[in-house]
Length: 389
Image (cartoon, rainbow, N blue to C red; front, top):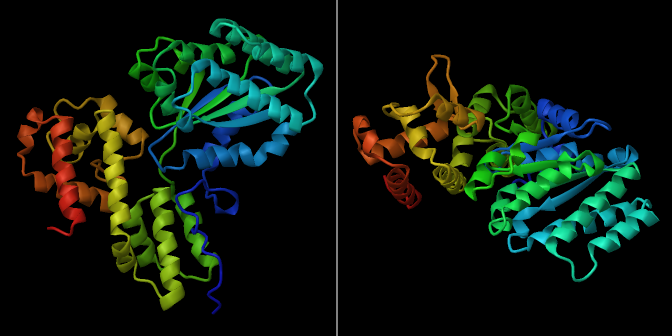
């Protein structure tokens, strides 16, 4: 057999595009129905934990369709807020104009009225308030020309850094989309909801109220089936037993499936067979790093103690909304018996071992805090990483 075939998971960890993209039909449909209709489209907030595929979803749904959308006079513009944390607010909004002008010039639709409006934005000596008014008028001229601008704000969690000294930035975003004369459309991509992001710096703009929030979570069964078909395309037969082992380690998590899938195919090229457990042992550290990163995110929004209580401890004090949040993010799910378990058996077992390591009586959970339980789990991770028992 020729082993020179391309590993379909070779680019794992990066934005998934083209033929590498798997499934997500319902999620793609939601993006399209909400944001890319010629008339009456609205704002969309894509929310999910790291590496769940948020940026990949929007790249597939929007950026790969740029030509089609441009033909309908919809202009998508991608902005990564994560690299703009030190930008001044007036410069941040001016960058919207700069990027829009570039796109319209590429489309040969930069008319004189838009050009004049652009020059007004960048006149020297203006106050930040006047600059923002001129930005509104710029997008008014763009809309009058028949174009609808669709801004994709990736890493929107970083808005707290950009707007930390002036929370009116959230209100300015709201007004750019809310007022019909210059209405632009926004898609935000973030780990937390817009409401949580605004609350972090005590903004009262209600920006979140003009967004549909859509949580992106684990692959469903039909997506996992499509994932296994990637192996078949390489001439690799994955037995039912091996499929079960892959699911044991990854559940439906797209990043972990790609990470393990890459190693499975590379091992197959060398040995012509695959021992899933052996391959998984090779990448134990990346899995552990991923779990640690996920726990870091849970401690940020005070969800770690709730997670451990729901899975292993006394659930007194845990609200229904706390359970719902962890389900929305896909971190836990219910099994056939109605009990809550981690998104994969391997992740669940990892947390169970961490729980046993802590040695606390479940009745003492009321005395624990997110911070001290986090410290104990971090110690367990450190020992586990170093090969301890």
